[in-house]
Image (tube, rainbow, N blue to C red; front, side, top):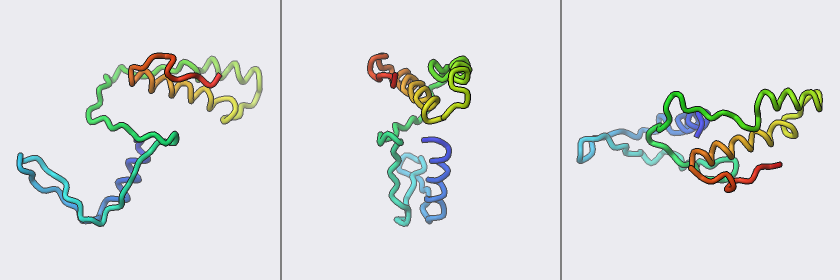
Length: 116
């Protein structure tokens, strides 16, 4: 989930009188009040988010775009002039998102076909 979603969930759940109490092993356990809403977080593609308890990435680990690059944007501007986000850029962004998800999940390149 992104920061906007986390902020929204926090606003929907804060101040509902739930509390943290010591559990049997001494760790804190959240006890809901029952007034919290039921929240189901899904992506725009209707996939359930896969939480990651620990960030396994190093500060140097960063996805480098393969499709939506500055060079590609310059090329598109030369070809089309003014760019339309949905028509010109979104397909490239989706391809980069597929590749990043594929890379993160250690799937083969052929698992996610590109839009072109």
